[in-house]
Length: 351
Image (cartoon, rainbow, N blue to C red; front, side):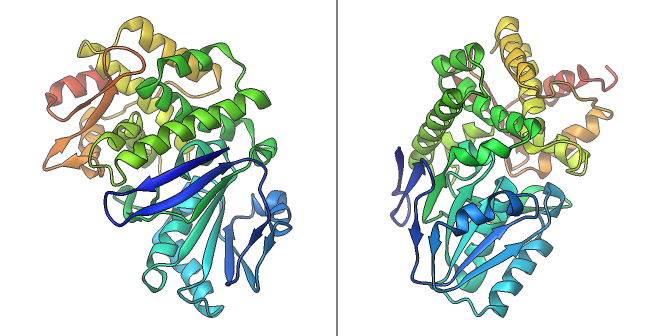
């Protein structure tokens, strides 16, 4: 299956997202595969067998969100300079969302931009992170605050990689799938409620539907000026959770799951979501091994963290919430701060 991306908002950009067994790939330029020591022993040989290029460099970076930094990207760039890569060379991101984000960012800045290809190996990166051209790194101020919109030349999604994925990593990907279903597709959400999501058939269907939904959104709004912001459901809260825990306690998808539960609490208080639907969303998350609780120690401190997020604008925080029922959404940047703090207080912040 091929899902096309066709961006026309700025300079026209087109590329394909291929969902199938990784095909043979032939390049007439230098190639560097960026991966990590977790993915490399599992999948590097599988990929190398399918790549033909005059020179292949393998660059391993440390595994983990805490290493998604400018320092790590600088290490990638140094390796490229040492190997005399030029503006016609190519990077391949082989790994999860962290690898994809850093590789794409490195590609965007190396000699003012070289090509890159995404080969995502986690469910989260296959259904979400590899699609749409968001790249970047974290810093002390927050998540992905340094980065660029930079589209890949191609994305190859091979479900084969998921066979070695730990349960926790798989669940983190399910969180992003739930996000898209709640925001855009009630029928898809019912599918998630009624199927064992670890079966090969369900996995392929999750990938197909999620990629199709995200591609449609990205084609409409490449740089998050409108509808693409809806994909941040759960992220406004989740990014604070990640920052408060130094990116070492929760996987990104786990933090997003917590963030969706928090967003749903706020939506209920605003009359946008029924208790029954909020419970249905929480049940799907919990049934797939995702955390749905978090201890907010300091409501004021948590709230202030929102202003460091990219989604704050001119002193207003943008909240993405269900829009009255599952499958719909609203974007709100006019909320009374006390309403948000009251929702946070439910999570243990001293009401």
